[in-house]
Length: 239
Image 1: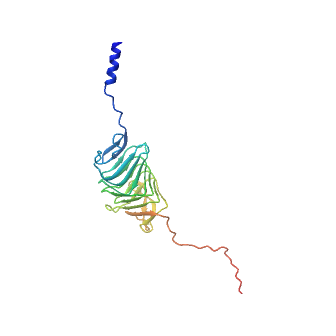
Image 2: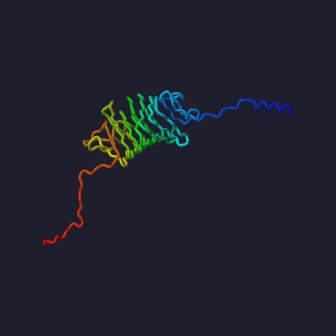
Image 3: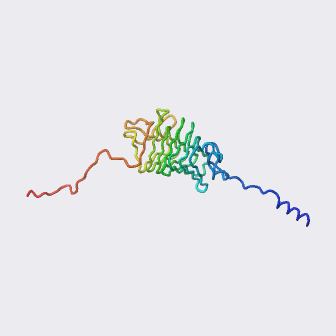
């Protein structure tokens, strides 16, 4: 009995094992966001890529919120089992030489703010579907999507400064909802065939691939307006 009592006391005073750290499989500037650090995504919290502004993560919804944030490094996730959301407030900037935004799953960017993306390679790479909904994005390199791209009521300006090539490379199709191509003139979505296979992009009125594409909220205006008179015949009293 004495041995049992002593064993129980030893267990009571032994140091308790800490709860396992949960990884949310999203990195900011190469640093994993986990249950230990997600409440302090800042330079002082161990994320040196966050230069200014506020960055928060909600593990319940896998939502990353940027509020007037400047990030010098990429936002990266190879998690294929979760869909992520980036919410934009204010003016935000992401700078990375290779791939500023990379997701292996579906990604939704929303929030009404502005995101400026600066890169020497590509701006956004998404392995599944990408939805840009109600926000503003400016990028100096192209956007590539292996799934579908949906742009909803948004302003997206892609100026592929480093190459006379495409602004978009999308495998599953491009859908514009309450959004229209304002540049190039006569721009339209078209599926093209290249040495890399078939993909959708934006071409100009001559059918040439456009490296600079601007999309703005609104619906396209018709080339001509046709008025229809009903009834087609009208009796007029000569007197």
